[in-house]
Image (tube, rainbow, N blue to C red; front, side):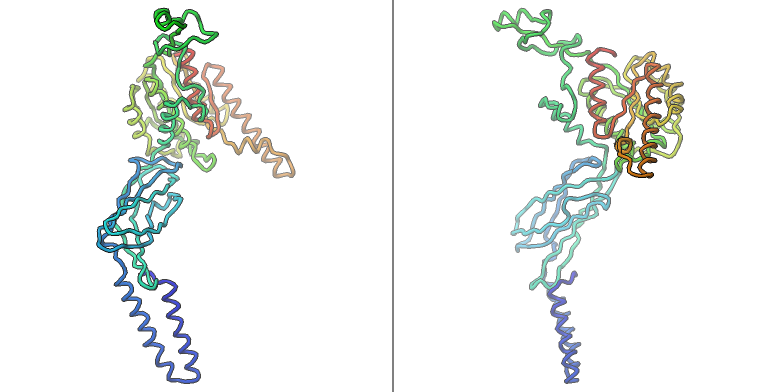
Length: 436
């Protein structure tokens, strides 16, 4: 039972009897009977209010939710009773989820079904529970609410940003990948695999003209080619202590997972083989490179519950393992963090030999706050220290990248918002220039 304003208004009338009792002691005798009557009225109102026993609620959402994204939740509410019912509904999403709305006013006729939609934004990956759905049915006179718990407890699994993969696929189908910073949607024009025919435009290579199609259509037609497929892309992900650092209130490891899965999806879309090696103080996951959308699902499942840990990563063990497991030339993308030249020298010992056989790319996440601090105007002693520290930090990272570049290891350092698109663009450039 949830007591409302009208109940307390009625109960406050008893104060009048207490005031009158100062002049007529007999009025004190009316206080307790009056209060008992008000309580009895509340009990009767509670008993008469709809119980929600004839309601059913079905909650629907995607099998997996994406972290830090708006995920749609649908509630299908049905009144199986013979009387109309009005109530206030509160769906109890996990405490760590941010919901755009939590309470809804609902009115249902007998046999009617309605749908309510809202969005939740999970802050972390992992397994969580919707705890149930509460309804508050208003009694006559609005004296009390009758609160009932509808058992809709339901597990929800939160993964890296799966919605971004769907958006990538949708934009690719429509040829609008430029909206997310990807420069091209199809790898046409370079390679040996025939892709399609199209009308000739000035500047096209005459060697690409398809003469049979030209004679049939009465206008110049050229062939389009795409880069060769079935090339291996291996994602190597570091779960060591440096990946626990926060950038824009999100761990670097989570930002890396989002970018890695976007690259994984792009490679699978191009029909390339995709594999994953995850390591911390030991090798934690190894998924051998394979083609197909099923491989993307396996990788998402393998990565969704991983977390960065406060240990020093064993780079030597990880890359020795990779060298033993995979011999064929491929694109090896290493997601880690390099804050100092000393850190770069450590990884060079193991990544340098691999760079002689493979295309090796080291991907790091840069912090926008450091860039802002390095460009700030100095107005006091504190700003001077902050700007100096930011500049020195940036210089250390640049020196670390240069050390890797000198032995043929490519580097990509990008802020969170550009990381995914920059990574996919690099992959597409490698494909387009046939470097694999």
